[in-house]
Image (cartoon, rainbow, N blue to C red; front, side, top):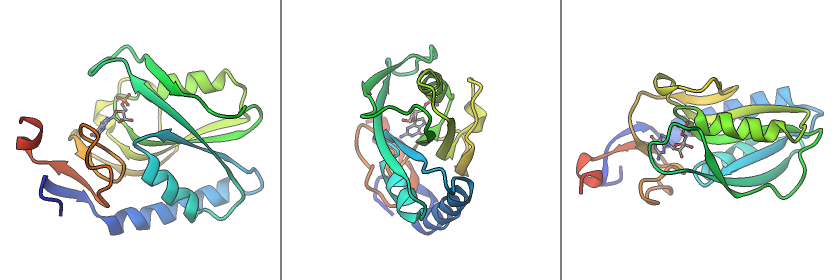
Length: 178
Ligand code: 5GP
């Protein structure tokens, strides 16, 4: 375990097993549809690359980067930092997100993408903090439910660090109270 972690919540092995399960579900559900797998940068980058690698059906990928307007915002407004390269019209889009917390980010994102007339939009989330949900959104595919704790690792950061940890864990208090 990394020295800055207080505990590991989800191990590398648990993540690997779950990724395989979800990839198999996606393979089944999207057979013959060539889904557009959409990576929401940066947090979902590891989950995304593992999921698409475990999928066997033909698929496309694209990337989008968004950021919230200031910490703790509840307006739901998020800023588009990098847009998709190509049109999603008539495509079956699967948004791959790191974590659904209040749900505002995803709500905004789905609304924006829906205006571009995709054939369908579904959400595949690594983590779901359902206790914190404020917006009316659900993860159609989800790897793990977690309690209301701030987590890092496997793509998730604290001040841009810890994204490369292979597991998901909770930081020691002294790290963010420094
Ligand atoms: P929401 O709009 O659902 O409240 O926020 C979603 C975003 O907040 C996530 O995509 C993620 O970037 C960030 N976030 C929420 N909870 C956590 C957490 O426990 N750890 C980290 N590193 N980021 C989080």
